[in-house]
Image 1 (cartoon, one colour):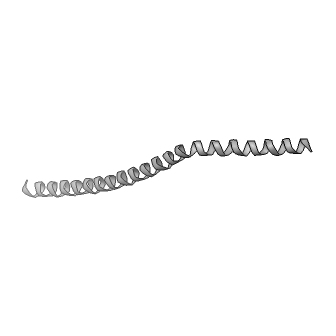
Image 2 (cartoon, rainbow, N blue to C red; image 1 turned 180 degrees about the vertical axis):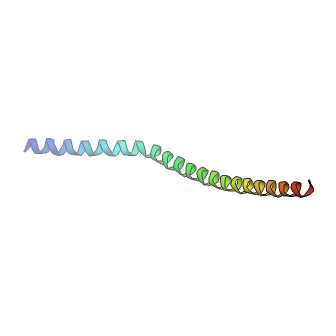
Image 3 (cartoon, rainbow, N blue to C red; image 1 turned 90 degrees about the vertical axis):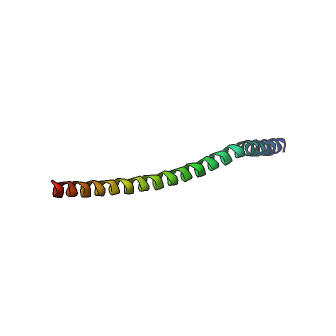
Amino acid sequence: TQQQLQRQQSSQDQRLHDQTILVRQRPAFQKVAALKDQLTSAQTIFAKINDHLTAQKQQIADLNQRSNQLAEKLA
């Protein structure tokens, strides 16, 4: 019937509209994915830097302790 044809056409129009929106959004989704990857890489790099600085801080503390021990022996 005419009503069924109109509903079918309306449904097809809605699907086409939804697909069009998805195609238009795809570059934005790809950009977001790329930014997430960059953020993850940056977080990994900062974690490595933080670990390195923590190790250096410990080395400095150890050297300070040795220095103080030597200063006490010399005093």
